Length: 361
Ligand SMILES: [Fe+2]
Ligand SMILES: [Fe+2]
Image 1 (cartoon, rainbow, N blue to C red):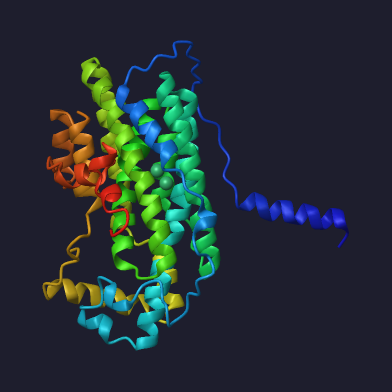
Image 2 (cartoon, rainbow, N blue to C red):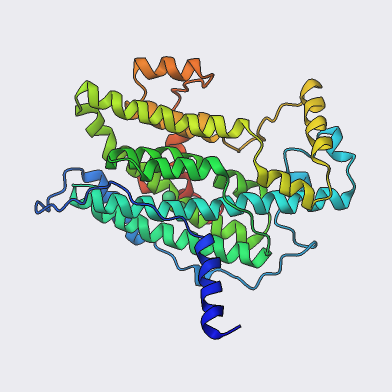
């Protein structure tokens, strides 16, 4: 094969790994440099102060059976009788692959966050919000970098889950910067903050623990930004505009809920790679459910939808009486309790549990 043919073949392969489309996002210049939201400047200040360099983490740590990413005892399946019937080797392979599958979703989701944060930088009119979104773009680039390095280190890579891609594409393809913010800073990042918290608590692997802690601290600011910037705007909006955003929020949450009702092909790959027959697995899960095993989360773990996403939409006025009925009709309880959301987000640096616990969390 000639050098030119080789290059063409490489380009073809690379093309298969990309997805390009045009969006309708407007670009907003603003020559009024005054801040309209003091809290956004405060968040931007903390974003600057809390920058970190991934090179300072200990990437030389070895991850092998003596130091696994996650012990099988730490997984939600360990207590279920069907799971314990699998051999130790199958259980360990399943734990390694299912964890790797989640880490791949963190990686792909973070790439989506680079795209949304840079879109917000373009489209938002308020200058301090542009500063903040630019700092978030840098945070997200660092998050892609650390998860890419980690996934390469463990050498198990899974494709993006279809509903996660659809959710991020839906946010990116709207014509309205406020919808991008709802899709990312309230919904995807609520999902992510919960998932990072749970990973942080389940893993004992020091590199993943330290990088997850750092990522979580950034994400807790990103979730705050959605509220600090959008909350007052939604409150001042015409009812029709508020309903339009509320409908978008409902549709975006529905993508997650409906997506999670289907079996992800990546999860089937996890089972096959672990030497577990998918039929055996799903039969076992049904039996465990019938025997009263619920997939309840252990103490300290949070439910992203119930504890973070829905409360953040309620608080910002993005669940109206009309869409509340839609949520209830779709079987999605509307949780108004802000306790976990307010404890986890970085609304004020000295009150954030993540900063407070910096050394010992
Ligand atoms: Fe991120
Ligand atoms: Fe983020």
